[in-house]
Image (cartoon, rainbow, N blue to C red; front, side, top):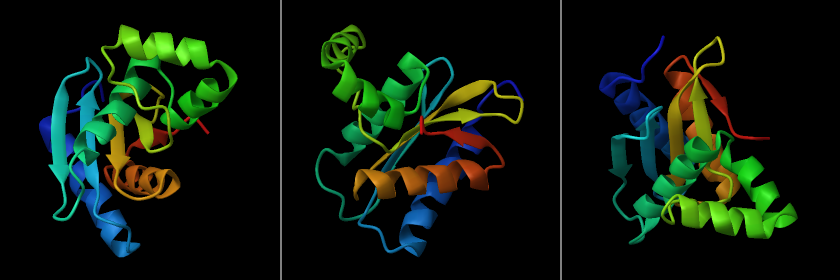
Length: 144
């Protein structure tokens, strides 16, 4: 597979929200980008707070921009805060360095895009993201 299609992105987004509901997470927002950085899907459940979609976008876009899952970005933010601050500026502010953003890869390890989730704890957001990617038959890389 060389491309994250709209159909696959919609599958990931829907399965991410389904995972959250099955686990009784708080209402979630999910963003899915393709490898070139184009938004393919953006969904917010009823009851999400005002800026959850933008946070989900920042988790996904930041992971894609730096080529690592947002859990790794979180570690970088602790270890090298000036780097993350500079990288956030370089990507126009669309970088949220906390768990909940994962690279989407095919079985050969090629990056197809990224998914970001926000609405519950960062760890639960990551669980939902991973569930969505796996439901589409792909591999998630959270940066763990």
